[in-house]
Amino acid sequence: MGYFATVKLGGIVIPINPTYKSLEILHVLEQVKPKGLICMDVMYGLIKPIQEKYKFEFIISTCIVDLAAIPPAVKEK
Image (cartoon, rainbow, N blue to C red; front, side, top):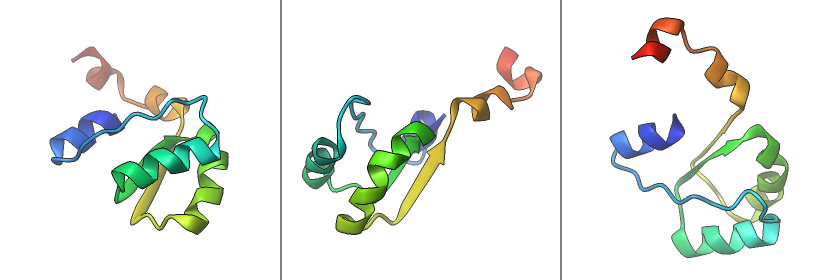
């Protein structure tokens, strides 16, 4: 959902390998200089230390359970 919302709003999606550690994530972020970040809740623990060094305008943390809450009518379309 975050991917499609970002593209719809004219943003650029930069996928980051979920096996990366904080320093590797920081290296990617320093290269692309994003304004914000959308991440899974399980990755937030790695993102939190980066917040101290890299100031995001926003961070959206989501989880797979959020997708389960989509009404059936929306899922079918």
